[in-house]
Image (tube, rainbow, N blue to C red; front, side):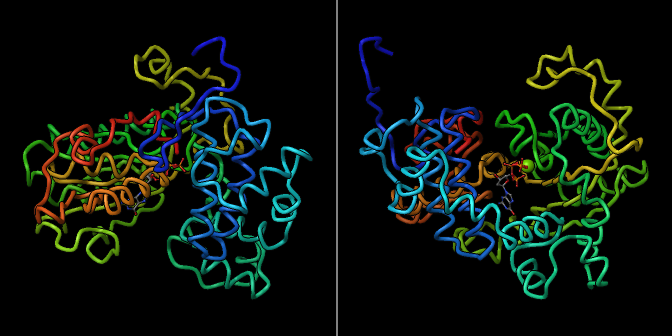
Length: 385
Ligand code: DGT
Ligand code: MG
């Protein structure tokens, strides 16, 4: 940085995957407002509108300074008319009337409460809202028919809406490591999702599991789940074959081994004593364990419920899966958009297909994938788009 410069000259690339987006940035007062509008658009299933607000917010996250005036935004990409209007209002008045009225609205609050139930998406929540329901209590009171996931979601509502700390994620990492090693020695377990990007809290803990010997990972998930269940560590689990084959945005002709990809949505029963007593973690060299060990026992109980996602990938797809499960969601979306629009390629969590060459591109690391895509490598801690 040159000390003589008044306004930093920022070259802002237009795709989030071309930029470095740190976790902590300078414009939360703006991005949080824009993200309320994005969330509200998601509640009404208006994806285009939601992505537009998320892209605007993401550009502001990548700025190396606090935005103080509209003229500082003039050369930036992705800032649409609506986002600019909201930003202008906040810069002038301190708040945006649209954002505040959204935040206060009965519909927004009810949608937030109802989609906060594990297993409930915007469509179901909206139907319930129109039937007059506002909260998880209303679901119980009116005897709504709930599937197994939603029943668990209601039962553990408070716990599942209490952010997971790094320390809890670390204890769960140890448990998952133990489970996986017990059923398949030599397996590799990677923490993905927000915690891999350096987040201090998360809504869940995400893991990706593989084995260097291709095929050794087959039928692994049921074994892991059985081990965890035998230990009484699971409150809920549902293992699914990856729905990738039916998804719209994957390559047209995926390799034949794709249907091996398995995912387990689970709820762990995490003993609080384990979290509070694990002093070993504080001395650990990994990027966890910096918090003090004085966490309160949640609601007086000896354990709490935590959402954990497990994904098993064949070794040949591990780099793609790692990249695909590290996020952020916008970063992933932008990677796929870049691949398609700028490179004529199709990227998924399984593979990268080059339409011009009509072949799949091999990768053993995330660096390989960025290189195939003609992008500078962005480390996980700067994928917080
Ligand atoms: P959070 O809310 O603190 O858990 O934040 P993240 O970033 O960990 O978000 P999460 O756990 O919903 O998802 C982690 C990443 O995994 C996300 O950035 C994109 C990816 N992901 C999530 N769901 C799917 C899915 O169904 N298919 C694929 N391919 N990727 C997914
Ligand atoms: Mg996560």
